[in-house]
Length: 393
Image (cartoon, rainbow, N blue to C red; front, side, top):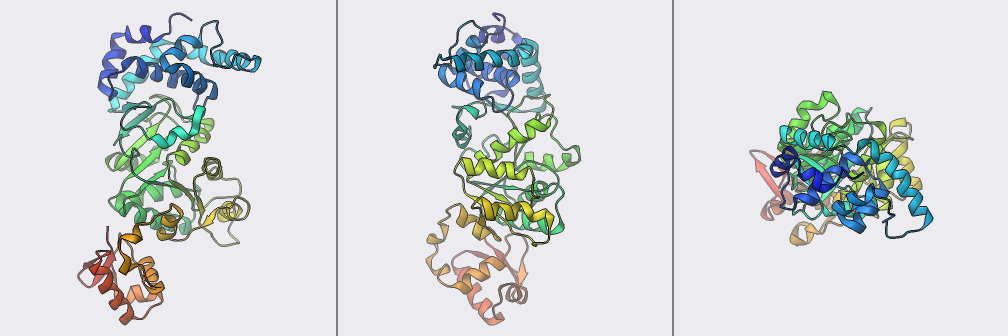
């Protein structure tokens, strides 16, 4: 199809003008081609990824509708795969569709990131040919570029226990600098995002549809807060609907973008187990929060612990340990005793607590809590607010 090349895209004045407003790059040919690929290919399309990895996005676009097999392998299997892929791409090979995508992004203030951009989250490249070809971002486009991130995922139909655990973990982790990554859904996702924002930290929500129509609709106020304290990201263009397949494909981005993945609450066949599977396949640390053995809502977490070598985590400190956190070495006097560790676990970075409450939560005497708080205060690890204390940031 000779009418769908990078030259044709850049010859469209509206596409070029929109790209200048949404793309933090001067290589508009490659960016335009990747915008087109995000329109053409479904998330995780390995044939598109292989073609782009060999020929670049612009070259791959030219090759996609030519008579040549240019995957770099040239065998019958590759020829057959490319032929089938062309059949998928051809109905979407329309300059107008690309124009609508970039125009929609400009209208909502989204940015278009591509590999090689300074703000591109490089952890996603570990997905190989299934890595995203481009990312559409609303909010802080650099939210994932350098920071350590923890994915917190779980059931939509979460229990009060699950939402409480998700909020406790996300709030403490976000307050200490980790970016909380999730999918913006009801239940565990929403609790994690809300706690991260509430603690003054950063959070990122990966969408299954376009960033101009984040789903679910009932979370619009939360999505506004996420944009102000992080980012909403999708690999499908503006206007794309959040289909069931795209939710599953989106899960691989949540796992790949994160240093570690923690499943807080999940049923036996929960979609969160799909995210956990991607994390495991990528070699990312995987944690699961246990629940009551009689709770069907935690059956998936128990399955991860029993069958998939997930690590049991119950506190933010244990999640940091899962991530390989060695920040305690910066404060040797504050890491020496089990009592001090118990007190740190009892402290919250969001809510200040008095010494009696800390004693109850840690199982220490009030006098011992006061003594340990004094030492932690000297090391800058706690903050005093009147007669109450919270974990320092």
